[in-house]
Length: 326
Ligand code: SAM
Ligand code: SF4
Image 1 (cartoon, rainbow, N blue to C red):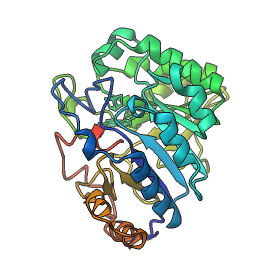
Image 2: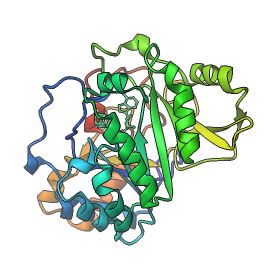
Image 3: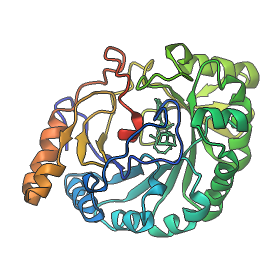
């Protein structure tokens, strides 16, 4: 699949639930979030069918996300089914890690190759304040379980929050370095405003880099190193350690090589994270659409993929990230 701007789509992010056991201030503020009714969520068979159709159109990488994907009942069976789809060669999972002590080994055996773990701080009190849950000990156990389970790659993702977690950068770098994990710093995307966070809490990746350089020396850019996304990577001098920066807001080239499409747990295809565009594929599927018709639906959505996101111009407070999957 290729859009009209030359973006070649090979990567599908699949959100399998809007439910979560945490309440991150930037993602799902407050306690009053109403979960989707169960019948509104894609069944396992529906999920597998849509991923198969995407695979037949050239998608080879899938990332399972949420909400918190590990809160979905029988998640390992769902994931194994995705791993077994012809054409899916790379299966990843994004998680807050709280439930990894229970699931890491089974997920690895089911075919998950890489795990992205959210970790904004190593300070237990701040962790509890930002996520609404005092789960840091479980998260640290979860990270160890992921290491023990032998995933090919484990990344730690830290959302930058000015005035909140800049004093944590050094500790996070040490933590990741000691364990051989890739740490990435991510700009806060303007999807919500809460009592804890506001526009003033936005910190650019440039600001973060400068703060890190004060402590560790000038970072060495690695323009040739890429993973599947828009991160830019740097070596820390005199350490065998690479860190990444994801600047959705300040990196003007952020969308250039975008290869992604998103499927929400209620069956909406989203051509872009930072655009309000979404298309309901659940309704035609449940009304009996054929595989060919669904394939055409995918192609039409990809054709509507914008040149770039409109986070900068089209601030979308109250569009909760949890409903999209990051
Ligand atoms: N629950 C899982 C987790 O926390 O990793 C997966 C879903 S979560 C929506 C996926 C990613 O989106 C996480 O790394 C989270 O930090 C990130 N995220 C959520 N809201 C965000 C925001 N407003 N700005 C930047 N990243 C955000
Ligand atoms: Fe849950 Fe992940 Fe969103 Fe935090 S970022 S509320 S863990 S879905």
